[in-house]
Image (tube, rainbow, N blue to C red; front, side, top):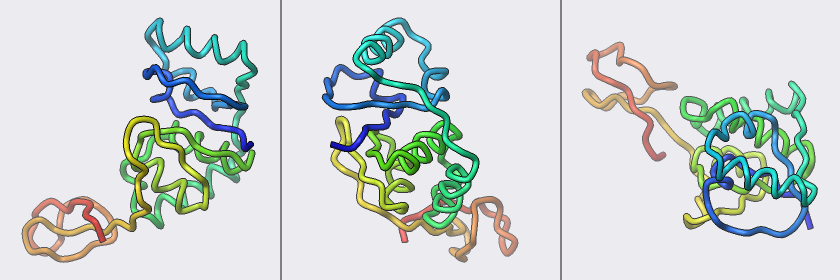
Length: 152
C-alpha cells in the first residue's frame, strides 16, 4: 500500500485512515487548534513522519502547476505536499482542488476526504471585459478589465 501524504485539511476532519503516513513540516505549521494538533500527535504515535521535499521536486510541482493553470492558487504548503508525494511515490489525501489537479498532472493518485474526486483540469485565463484569452491573471492590456481563471 503506498504511503499517504496528508494535507492540512485531513487534520480538521474526523475521518480515520489506515496505512503509512507522512507530511511536510509546512503542514504541521498550519495546524493551530488543539484538536488538529492532537490528531497529528495521535498519527505520529502510529508512525506518521515529517519529511522535507527536495528543491528539485518542488520545482517539478511548480512547473506542473504552471502547466495546469493552478499556479496562482496553489500554496507553498500544497507544493510541499505534492513534492513529498512525488519523492515517496505516495498518494495525496486532500479536498483541495488545486492541489488535487496539480498532483494529477504529475500522475499522483489523490484520495479525497469529503468531496467527490476532482477531475484533472486545464485552466485558461479570460478577460471579463473583452473575453481575450491570456497566459495568466491580471488586468487586460486591451480593455483594462480583470482577467480570471476559467475552465478550458
